[in-house]
Each structure stands twice: as C-alpha cells, then as structure tokens.
Amino acid sequence: MSRRRGKSWLWVVLALVAVGFQVWRDEQQGTKSPTKQATKVFEVILGAKLNDHPDNDGDSFHLNHLGQTHEFRLYFADCPEKRRHQFNADRLAEQGRYFGGLSEPETIEVGQQAKAFTQHLLSTQPFTVYTKWQSVYSSTRHYAFIIFADSEDLSAKLVRAGLARIHTSGTALPDGRSVSQYENHLREIEQAARTHHLGAWGKER
Image 1 (cartoon, rainbow, N blue to C red):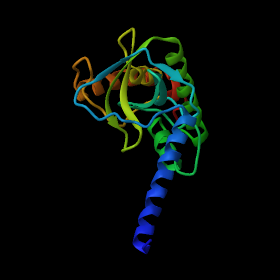
Image 2: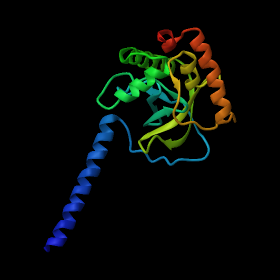
Image 3: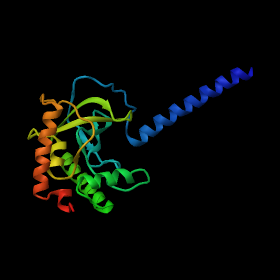
C-alpha cells in the first residue's frame, strides 16, 4: 500500500471514530444530532416537556418532544448567569450593572432565582413552543418563544418578575407584533417591576 493511500485510510478511520463518538455522546445525553434548518415562519410545538438538564437556566433549557431533546433559548430576555465560571466574569459584571450595580454574588443569586422560576412554570403549566430553528451563535441551541395559556410568553414573565434584562436577539412575534412594539411592551413591564422592587430590582443600589 502506498504512503498516500495509507494516509487516506487513516483519515477515514479517524472520521468514523469521530462520528461514532458524537453518536455515543448524544445517546448518553439523551439527544439526537440536530437536523433542523432555520425557517422564515414559526414551527409550533405542542406537548413538549421539560428535561431536567443540569445546563438549564432561566432563559435557556432543554425540552423533550417526540423522542428528541432540543435546547431552546428565549428571544428578547437574558437572565443573569446561575453560576460563575472562568469565561463569564465580564457577562456577570454587565448583568449586574444593568440591574443597578449588583455585586457578582447578588447577580448569581438572581440567576438562580430565574432558573427556579422557569423550571416551575415549565413543569407545572401547559405551554406552546414557537421556533424558527434559528441557531444561537451557530450552536445546537435555537431561539424560541414559550407561550402559556394566558397568552403571555416566558420572556415577558421573567421581565415582569424582575428576573431578566431586555437583551439578546429579537424577532416579530407569532401574534404579529413587531420587534419595536414588543420591546416597548417589555420596557413598560420592566419599569413596573423596578417601581415595585421585584427580583433583581429589589437589590438595586
């Protein structure tokens, strides 16, 4: 066998090993490799259930649906980080400043409250997922709206409770409201949360 052919077979073997490892990792995590492509219209997902994944937080979480697990990230809302790690110090500081100058421990405390808030709602209330399968920074996460029976979405509920800042990607809503219309709505309920010292606003300096 020539040296060139030997190298070709080596690359094939390495590629097969990599694919096999990815399949094994997905199976260990209870997920399947994402195959969804971004669309211009929302796909409506009914009957999804919360997956109690350790990476879940206030604005990003894993949901089970039809034998697959998908990780979704909310449009418009950004909850404080739920823990400190080596890469998120700047983000924690930015989040703390948004809420009036919170310390890092205070910011993390709000992030943990947001995680518990979201987990409770997704575990106890019926909801509908609206997604265009738009990737979050080319990751396996996808942006989505989570809308409850009262017609309010999770992003608004988090802002209303003072547990999220108005931040990150936005899009026109499934009900037809534009980005600017919805941002104005969020600003109004954020001001109410701040006035009543709810969530992070209760710690504001």
